[in-house]
Length: 207
Image (cartoon, rainbow, N blue to C red; front, side, top):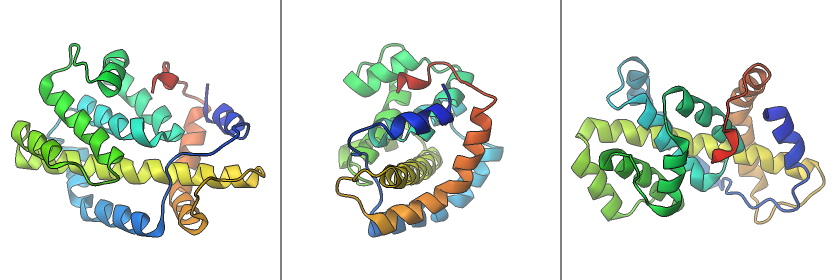
């Protein structure tokens, strides 16, 4: 399976109900990523949390937002870093730890809570994260979460417009905000399309 097939199958969907951007949400999300760029840049050189956890956290956000492009990219990366996708799915669906460390599970569930509450994680989730990670680790994890939140809704916004162009209606859509999100996503999606022609990660549909 690749992104070309995903494009074709999406146009046969009867209703588009995934989360996309409103203008205020786009502004807040983009501003948060810009604010966290120094931390993200440092994480590329010297990450403070394992790369496997980074991918699990990003998939935690996407388990709520459901961006098919993010699922394709980060599932492949998670597999490359040795993540057990079955255990991750169990955690996200049921809260079952399996062999996952409680520390890692806390970060993953925080990411899911962040997305589920539309960028307003609960005080309990924040406290749990702060209890198990250093202040800088929290900043790095938060930077990853903001980045994937923006990316996943940009991907969904692009799909919303593809859906419209196929002649179907988008439920509760915000065309202007979604167009801006789609424009932000366009370069990344183009690269993803090229990569999908030569790379086909297994278990892409797990999440």
